[in-house]
Length: 320
Image (tube, one colour):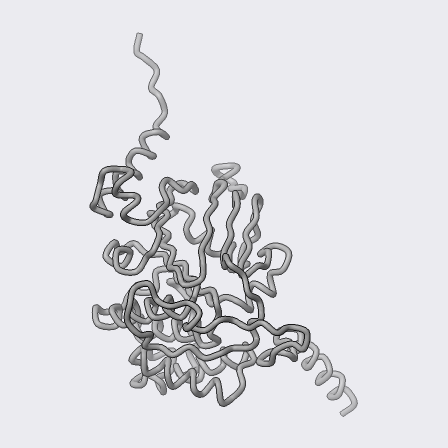
């Protein structure tokens, strides 16, 4: 039929818009590529268990992978009126660093992470990811990050292997590189037993592992994990934490959101405690312990939250 060539042209144009034709190959006018783990040795010792594979589709080289300056997000609520979800937040994250973001529910963590991943647009300040502005170059940012939230959806009619493979193809990975990545990731995350399980048959833990696999399949330089061990059993959670730790030794820039203090102590190089849209404290665990004279991370967290809440209490009028 005459309409079919026209439909094919439109479909091809859409695919080229989502996946650039140069994906998987180094542009002719760019010579630098992302550094391997040899450039970013681990400061925590040991060998990376998930091998890094050169990905020439990421040609930019920057000293700071994430730069956040006075980032803000406000919206209007019909009941509450103007609401500030994030209030002039600033921080930086380097390659080979895990930056922990801690805070209670509604503190602004997810809002911040969604702006860094271009899902939400900032209403103030700016954020650069891999040298690209999240507001001006969202498509560039998305090609350089892997993002996983604690409620990432899984397609019911696709197996674990099919879904991760599907995302690898969306990112334009060559077939041989994609198959190598799949084999290594499924082995490292203990996923071989669920590679042929449909999404509709997966438990919460299984879905979480598949979500992590699709986050790292294209080997991005920046990774954002929003409570990645949520719903996992102890053994699998340990494997996930070890995998994230190995990604640091490969030079990955990682933002790690969690409520589990043990994970913070084990993984994070620096920590930001956030509440009511503001960063209350930031630094290494040793720096925070010395500054606030509290070596226990959990106690420090609650003390800062409580002090901040008390400052928001309305002043009662004296009785007459």
